[in-house]
Amino acid sequence: MEEAMREGPMREGEARRRHSRERDGASPEAAAGAGRSRTAPSTRALTRVAFTVTGLGLALTLGCSEPTSDSVASGGGDDIEVELCDGETSTRVPARAEYTREGGLAIASDLMAQWKRRNPDAEWVEAEREKHRIEPPADNTDLIGKTQGHTYSRITERHVKEWERELMQLVAEGSQIFHSPDALGSEIAVSCDMCHPDAANTHPETYPKFQTQIGRVALLRDMINWCIEHPVRGELLAADSAEMRALEAYITAQRKGETMQYGKH
Image: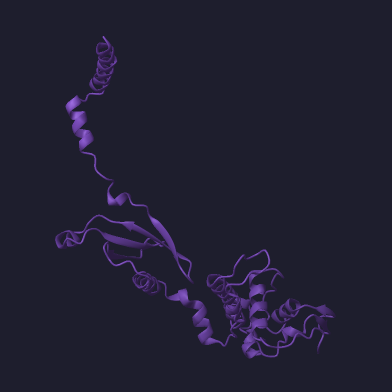
């Protein structure tokens, strides 16, 4: 009796499962075969990993591609395609290549070399430094590993490189404007460097101070605009414009090491 009671629900459950399979159009044998044929997900479903090339902020996307005929023939497995975020630059490496930092750097170097060939103006900061002398910023490497108030829990090498990169871009932009009549909007083809080579004799360390030609106490940006308006015959810049900030950064950078003496004539 107990055995019959146990078998009854089991038969009913099997009948319900069979009815469900038949209703869906699959026989018990086909369903069992389908279950056995399941395999692991394809390598194409591997998670795509994003990482950044330090110094240029270019995202790279790592993904697995379909096996190539060469890799299948050699038994090497799938190749891995590494693609830059521009959607055009890519390189391929063997999936079974040894996982080392040197190998990663070689991949990144190959990608960046391709990208630079396609974007010759990408190194404009270095190009500007080659054309015109620009004082380097202060060296902050001694801060690595230390803390700085509530802003940084711990300063890293990446922080220091980011500070320098962002600063040098602003200073180099100021140098470009300083040396370009077109960027200054000059009507007579005059640029700042024609009177102040490498920002000489600008003395940003002496501002604020009273300027007779302006008739009041002037900040450095006030004097920059006076020069743009008169000798350069260009377009006045808004005090908070990107161009004014860049000019102030460049002029100040060129006086690196000078003692602040505001009001000095």
